[in-house]
Image (cartoon, rainbow, N blue to C red; front, side, top):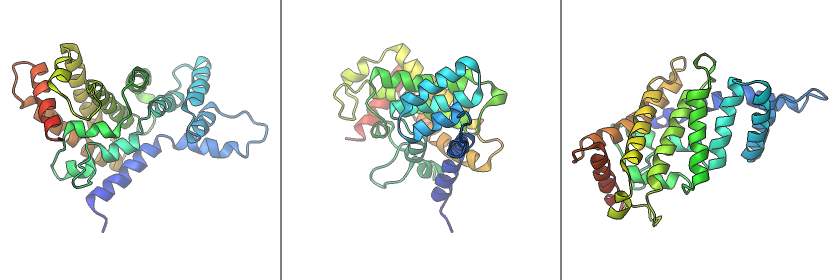
Length: 262
C-alpha cells in the first residue's frame, strides 16, 4: 500500500502537469503537422522543454498581441517566467520546508501535523536577484490577476499559490546579505514595515488560493491541502511570536527560525 506521502507526491505531479496537458499534446502533434501553422502554445511548450524560457516568453508575448487574454497562453507564460527565475513549482511543492534531518518533504510533514523552519526553504530557491524577484512576481500577477476566473487552466491556482510562496520566501531570503542561510539581527533590522506586510500578505493569499484549489480534482485538493497545512503552520507560529506589531512578530519568528537552523 502506498504511503500518504507517496500518494500526495503523485497527486501533486498529476495536478501540476494537468495544467500543461493541452499544450504538451499540441507539442507532440506539431511533429506531424506538416506545413500547418504551429500553435504558439505548443511552440512555447517545446521551448520550455528545451529549457529556453526566454524564447517561450517571446513567442507567447507576440501571440497575446493577437489574442489578448488567452488563458492558455497566459498560463504557460507564467510558467515560463517562473522557469526563467529558476522556480520549479513541482519541485518546490514536493520539497517545501524540507527537514534535512529526516529528508521528508513538507507535504509529508504537513500531513503528519508537523512543520519545519521557514529559513530551511532558502535552499529550495535561487539567489534572489532583482530579475529573479521580478520574474516570480510577474508569474504570480499573471496567474492571479490577468486570467479570467472562468477561463483558468487546470492547476493555475495551485501554481499561483506555489509561485506566491516562492516570492514570499525569496523576499525574505534577500534579507540574508551574507548568504549563509541565516538571518542576523542586522539583516532583520533592514526589513521595513512595508516588506513585512508584503511577506505576510503573500503568506495569507497563498493559503487562501490553496483553499480554493482543486475543487474538481480530488488529487489536486489533497496536494493543496497538504501544502496549505505547511503554510498555515508558519502563519500560526508567526502570530504566536512575541511582538507588539506584525513586523515585530515576523522579526521574532524569522530570528527564531533562523537560529534553529544553526
